[in-house]
Length: 97
Image (cartoon, rainbow, N blue to C red; front, side, top):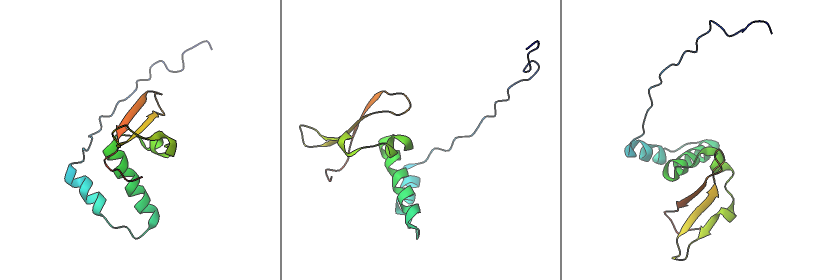
């Protein structure tokens, strides 16, 4: 190319106002009753991601073998994150499995 096709163009960055959910917001979502099964599954996945800090892709890729019973009997999710490959260890709040 004999010229820069992007010269004179400027990127525009638009600031986005982030909404942070409060514990009462999360509780309201948890208690919301959906008539459609698909929406109940999405709600449960969202709540799981809120409490564990995992991304949706990490939840989708989660395998049963990545849920480990620790020496004290508690359950932990031990896996590598999808985006970064960095290991993460997340304690489970329940002993049911």
